[in-house]
Amino acid sequence: MRLLVTGGAGFIGANFVHQTVAERPDVRVTVLDALTYAGNRASLDAVADRIDFVHGDIADGAVVERLVANSDAVVHFAAESHNDNSLADPWPFVRTNVVGTFALLQAVREHDVRYHHISTDEVYGDLELDDPARFTESTAYNPSSPYSSTKASSDMLVRAWTRSFGIRATLSNCSNNYGPFQHVEKFVPRQITNLLDGVRPRLYGQGRNVRDWIHVDDHNRAVWTVLERGRIGETYLIGADGEVDNRTVVAMLLEIFGKDPGDFDFVPDRPGHDLRYAIDSTRLRSELGWEPRYRSLRSGLEATVQWYRDNEKWWRPTKSATEAGYSRTGQ
Ligand code: NAD
Ligand code: TDX
Image: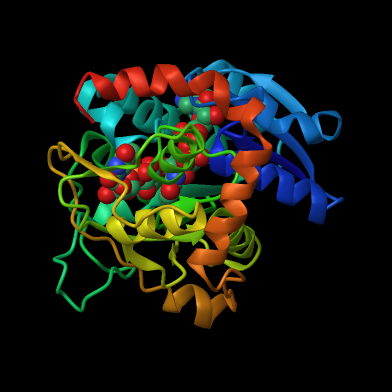
């Protein structure tokens, strides 16, 4: 099988490529990645001689057409992915997430190639902290941020291309991922690398916002499950029952580092900050038999802390520019 992976030099995409190369010798992987600030060639060093890497833009119709024509399936991870950046400058989000997805859809339509679309639970907006509800595949779309609205837009394009043009597509919407190779702008690696640098973790607002954490390897195993056994045209929510508020995550990290639980700072809140995300992944579990392997956030975080300790060479070059960006908003 020839598999085109967009965004394979990013966090989830790189972990997907590692998992695929390790577990599926019959799959020939080609990565298409623009190597934006979020992409890192070094994330693929360990598999470099077992994959093909193309440095290119998913919004470039000619490149996309050529690569899709030579593939049996596409898994589309490439995106602008950070909410805070989307508030400062939304255009790259519209361009990559909407126009880029459009280019891929046109190509898979033209060449009748199987397509799996990676999306987020943020398309559903947020839930109240005390609401017993969780998101399901039939929850109405209600995105809050420029980032989530462009992801919602791309999901809508996929659904329309499936119905109107009969493309062979599936979608998955996953909750917050953590694990190796995540950019230091994101919550978990930002706090881990701060702690490694002797800097106090920084919580937006009151730190009460809840995210539904899943280890990136569990997400990627679910993606393979849907790619192989998902029903064409269907959406599957991916989540591992990992609801925790941000304060608790920081408390766990402080404990792992042997620090006082009060050793953190509150910083200005994110405008429009979604309160809570929560995934009901019953369809994925009961129809396709997927189960997460990481059962405890605490032990998953311990392993992630160890990865950042062991891989300073990977994250150090991006740390100071990322923190300089945050200092502009006092965050
Ligand atoms: P990331 O920002 O770490 O990586 C994105 C990758 O896409 C980078 O390698 C970047 O260079 C590449 N890219 C960006 N624009 C491109 C373009 N125009 N052409 C080609 N490549 C381009 O993102 P991530 O956290 O790995 O997220 C991957 C996907 O998973 C995204 O679609 C995101 O919406 C989705 N998702 C992420 C999470 C999460 O917790 N991180 C949760 C659910 C869904
Ligand atoms: O320093 C911080 N302090 C803090 O309190 C940072 C960077 C974040 N936060 C909060 C904001 C969120 O409530 O932590 C939570 C997680 O923040 P992010 O890592 O920025 O993730 P989030 O906005 O929840 O979105 C993530 O999950 C869904 C990914 O970035 C998206 O790509 C994905 O779709």
